[in-house]
Length: 308
Image (cartoon, rainbow, N blue to C red; front, side, top):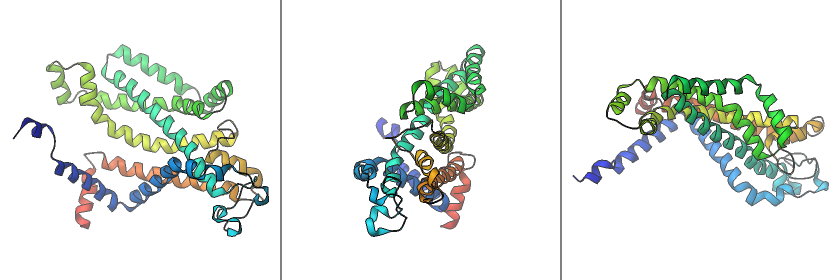
């Protein structure tokens, strides 16, 4: 057997691992439906603006506040029209891009920064750890809403500034979690063996510690994605978040608030999108918490074997 074949795992083993994950996901119907819902939302966010951008922005005052399920004005008005006669269905799909962009950008940025500082704080000496943790304490000492109001007031409301604000407020969560995980992992035998063999600090962190911490961070990021969505919606609802011509689900809820008495669908449909997407993320994070934990994964695998 050649050295290359030893270094690379057999393709059949990779397929078997993927099939096992898909089987565990299929057996948990709530998690499976959640994945389908999230894939649909991300597909709308990716393709929606290109396909329905003009339809979502063109105004038609004859169709303003059109009731839902009235197809006399076309299929696009199946969910009704807004105060400027724009179809709600196209607006919801169009707004998915900005909503997902803000949530994904904030989560990814806070995950990278928080995990990096958490790895350093957990692995390096006490002095470095204390400095980093005090910075996290400073961020956590300010209410996240106050930070958002100040930053957005100074820099102005925009998608980039919204990502910056939400990412700053979420960094301490990943930092503290990563540090706690590293403090436990670094005492394990394989890490001590790598230190004795003379491996560099960054090699130990990247090759031996990070893979052990990553499943926990991925699970938290999935759950945090839902929290960031709600935070963005709250800020947009208060009027200090995304501003027109950009549009998010939270901004649509805010714009539909004055019409709750005579056009409830203006706020109901974007609110329903927020609830469904957040619920799907929570259900998926619960499944990932078990699936990514080797100590608990056997529960899903055993369930799959029993059902078969």
